[in-house]
Length: 244
Image (cartoon, rainbow, N blue to C red; front, side, top):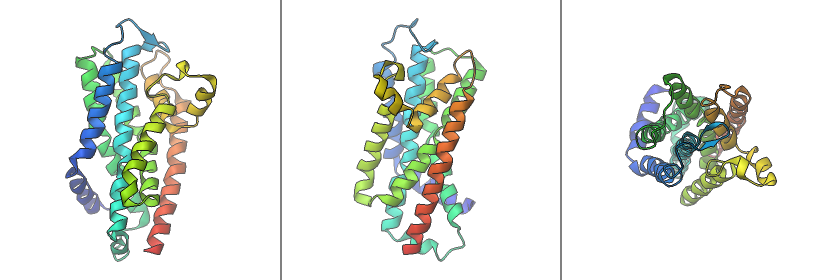
């Protein structure tokens, strides 16, 4: 990984505040609509219902921010950035890792804001260890979505990457059970949900709130999604650079 390139990438990305603002405001609005109207004593799958919604909305925000890297990559491709990179010692693996780290950094603000809002406005009470666990697992759960953003960035054109990313985010969140609990879905939808990384990210993050502790199976599935999608993104980068 090239730290100088990563710093440059972070500074350039932060100039586009619309990405971060959307990733923060959207889950906050949804949490206010669906979470703050829930009775305090309601529960879902053995977890406080409002805490359940809080985690789901926080994941939605982090995945939205992580997938936004696709727009940056598409713009770089259109501007001939890959041709420039071929003249530098930056390796393909270092480039991809830098983009993944950038996506993980972008995923932090939505998580922090939604959790703070849940703690203050939603009166979500968790132990210190639960807050740390759910925050860490939710943050690392952005990894497969960072990889999805990379893949979209190498496949889509600059003028189509934003709608593709937005539609993909909405579909993954809806079918993955972030907007509606999977237990409330029809049987067919439950099976479809388990084919999405959002479902397993939600399972692993919300399991940190349960008495039984972290769902290691869900965590391993999220890691599996990350490895597969990361491999695809690396292949797409190499193929795109070879054509540049």
